[in-house]
Length: 389
Image 1 (cartoon, rainbow, N blue to C red):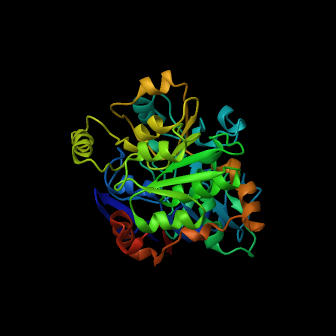
Image 2 (image 1 turned 180 degrees about the vertical axis):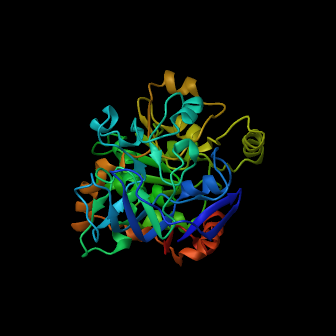
Image 3 (image 1 turned 120 degrees about the vertical axis):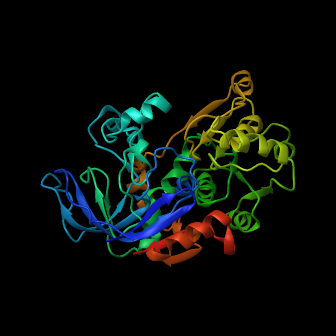
């Protein structure tokens, strides 16, 4: 089969690789009909997530048709159309029983690697380095899905792929980012990052009852997209974000702040940006936490900072004094996607949200290298690339 493979920092290639096979009794094989490039994939592409190996198959947002199931998979059968959550979860451990699927205790066979960096291991993730299990990803013609009796959600044929594909990751992630804010009527929510996850965080905050949502980014086309969803916007290269947020909130700050940026944040001040870039290049620091630092400083006293931008390791100059002395709460997670699949599918069906609005480019699988370049470089107002095998 064809698959998009990581070949080194800044390089991916579509290659012929062996077809996946059933390895365990709870596996399924999926013929992929749609897959996407995620902002988190760019972290791998640019070499910021350790334990990648040449030839690893990328991709964790995918859906398709079941072609084969293991003997213990009774809820699926060949021909079923499914969307696959990006975290791999067993459904049986304590974390899964509490609905915390992205920290499943049984799905990462390389847990020891993650424990060295993180203390404990999260769940396995499709196509996201050997630290997260070394699972082949979904930017391919076929994929093996472990614990298929727990993860995939059957989708009836009345909804096209583009309306349901993002149930695999970014729609639930944006929704959970807003949910962790404990939004109450009248709340003002600020969202750092107007990429696809940020767009869904904006939409989700409104759906969950926020009175105002403020989106922060530097690309006009992304800010315009957020404005069409009802958000107020700030271009952080044009204004001082902290001053602007104080002015917009009567000096108090937003009730909750969502970091939808993560590891590769940008900063308009050259000296500050160079400092973190240099530490990152020297592997003294793994992540650039500009958005996180700013969100903590901007949030009102007693407010909530919700972190859904992906982080991989260590950050420097974390504003712990502001966090502790100002009674802030920080919440963060890889999304527990399985928890949100059915409720969000219902919202898609009733028309309260159409996730396809984030799609800017549609390409064939063999155009994936070009898709990665466009997405990384923000060419042609690229917001979200969907690939068709």
